[in-house]
Structures are given as structure tokens and as C-alpha cells.
Amino acid sequence: MEFMTAKEAAKQWNISQRRVAILCCENRIDGAEMLGKMWIIPKTATKPDDARSLRFQPLDNIAAKPFVKWAGGKAQILQEIRRLYPLGLGKTITKYAEPFVGGGAVLFDILSKYQLDEVYISDINQELITTYMQIQNNVAELISKLSLMEQKYLLLSDVERKVYYYDKRERFNALKTVANADAEVASLFIFLNRTCFNGLYRVNGKGGFNVPMGSYKNPTICDKNNLTSVSESLRNVRIVCGDYKNSFEFIDRNTFAYFDPPYRPLTSTASFTSYSQDGFDDEKQIELACFIKELSSKGAYVVASNSDPKNINESDNFFDNLYTSLSIARISASRAINSIGEGRGRVSELLISNYSGVRV
Image 1 (cartoon, rainbow, N blue to C red):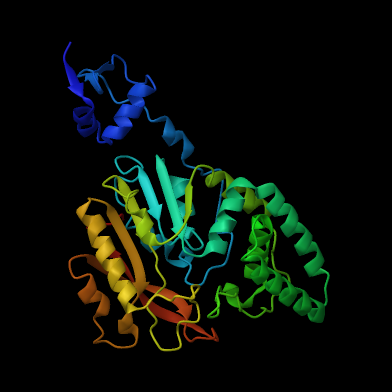
Image 2 (cartoon, rainbow, N blue to C red):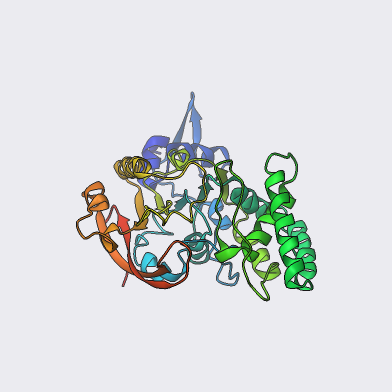
């Protein structure tokens, strides 16, 4: 019988050498043997079905959708983003990463449609990530807390609602430095998102959430069915609070990565939707572009979205110059047309990809 090394098997099966070794250790490859300190595998062996893929079977029967309203959310341009999903997604492309997950419109769309081995999401917003983790691991308690808040809030008069909202906002900010309060933080995060102005998440220089109350008559604060669906879809997703650069080791040539960073402001007053006290200026946009190019050199499939400065200044080629070696598509989106959201209009946005070809 002829044998091949784990490295040769990895190349033949289009998986990592480490994964081949794990499969050997799990006795999932017939005839595999240890020779000294290395595995040898019969050349006639076939790649075993990856049991990990059972974690991310398409969930068409679980209609998970974003559990928060999110400024700049991608639900309305999802169809355009879908056209850029790489053709091998769910087949040869078995991993997905979304390092600026936000509301997760693209994440939940992909989880509902594709069979994947591994999924990684992250964000620098600690409270947002805490909420994702609580939905993943503690959804029953979260639903209970939200249900109680919803029942109480909807019975209040407008004046009483205002007092209740600002009390909860103050409590939310106080809990940011309190240990073992994740369930309450997550419930307050969702409550504030559902009742604040335009569903924004904005912080002051000290990191305190400072969005005023909205004017919703009958807001849905506890969407039990969706929270349950989201919990199921997140069951084995790797959730990380941290900088997008932390995803570098996860993302490889078998990965589709979507980057939706804070958009470059079109005007000096358009940064109202910033959710980090550190901001995301042009220097950070340039750093992200360099990071995406590094991922491209690893063979990863990358799509990024951003604002189109040509909406305001036709001669502003910031992103055209920054991503000159990548493909840039301009699409139409409905967005707030000023910093206080008094109206909406059609604007151009950018979808940047490091590969060609779209789905029809």
C-alpha cells in the first residue's frame, strides 16, 4: 500500500495540515498510521465528511434577522452584497468572517443559506459583543428581562416613558465597569436600541452612551421568536470583542470575509453614527485597506463596503486611489441625508472586492 504525508493529504483535500492531523487523531481516516512523529495516510483514502459542518447547516427554517436596529445597516442593500458572495461559498470556501459585525444582516443571511465549517465575528463595541454572547449562551434569561421591561414600558405615559428611558440609560452606562452584569447589560442594550432616536449607538468622549429617547408609540422590545432563532444560528459562531486585525489568523484562502467599517463621513457633520469614542479617520481607513491587501495575498475572498465621497465631491478619489488594485462597484442606497436624520435620499455607496465575477 502506498502512503502520503499529512501535508500531501492537506494539499489534495484543500484543507489545513493541522486539520488532517486532527482527523487522523479522531480515527476518521481509514488506514492512517503514526510513523515516528508524523501521520501517514493511504493514497487511496478519501477526505472524510467534516463533522464541524453540521454546526452551520443552512437554517432556512430559522428566519434569524438582526436583533438591533443599526445605523448604516445592510438589510436594504443585501441583494447587491449577495451578488458578490463568491461562487465557492459553502463548497470550497468553508469559512466566513465579519470583523465589523454590527447588526449582522450579512451574517444572518449567510448562516441561513450556506453550509460552513467555521464562522468568526467581532466588533470593538464591548456592549454589542456582550449582547451577541448573551443571545448565544443565555437567551432565556435575556428574553425574560426584556419581556418585563416591555410590559412595563408600554403601559407608561409619554412623560413616564421619558423618565424610565433616561433611568435605564444611566444604569446602562454605570454597568459598563461592573463585573458579572452581562445579562443586564445585554437587556439594556436591546431596550435602549429599540427606544432611542433612530436606533443609533453613539458615545461621548468618556465612552458613555448618550443617544436621546426616540418617539416610538409601540416599540417591539422583546422579539422572543427572533431572539430564539438568532441564538440557534449563533450556536457555534466564534464571537470576539476586539480590533478587526485580530481576525488575521482566522482568515485564510478558504475564507470569505466581509468588512463593514464605520463609513468615511461625507461631511463634517455626518459622523453622528459613530459608535466608538476613538473614531475611524482616514488614517484608519488606509490601515484597513492595507489589511485587506494582506488578506488578498493569503488568497482570501474579501468584500468591503464604504461611503462614496463622490456624492459630495466628484473629484474626491480617496477610495478609488486607495483600492486601485481591487474592484469597486457603486450601488444606490437610501440613507439619512443629514446629521439629524430629518430626511432620506438616494446616495451612492461602494462595494469593494478583491475578485471579479458576480452572481446574476
